Length: 158
Image (cartoon, rainbow, N blue to C red):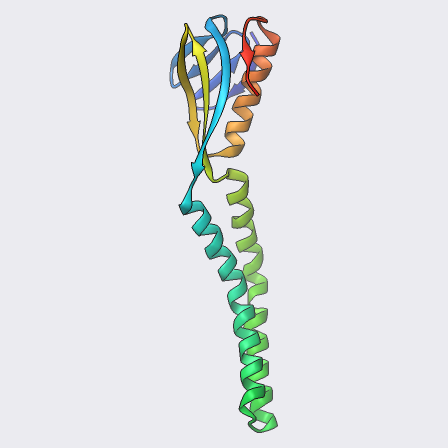
């Protein structure tokens, strides 16, 4: 028996797919397909908030420089306002790496619920539902490999 995927709740082998302790024998599966749900607004709003957090200090710095030039104060005051604005703009640097990491992670994990379905014993059964795009991809590829290595009667819809 070959194991193609194994985590705490899903195991895909050359003979069966186990999901939360329930076994689906590959010989009893005729078709496998996937379904992507609607986008999660929570994830999209989170991405927008990260973008705003990245742009905020830069916008504040630009507004500070513009304000300093519009006020027409003495050169010392103008230089102080421009200097403070530049420091605010530079503050985004150390925080940017942290924010970009979270932004990257949100794209890797995806913004949709993904499901893997199979026709098992003649009826459709949802095998897996997850919002983690990386995990979904690994499980689905494992199912494809198991099916391709097994009986030719099983069909994978693409």
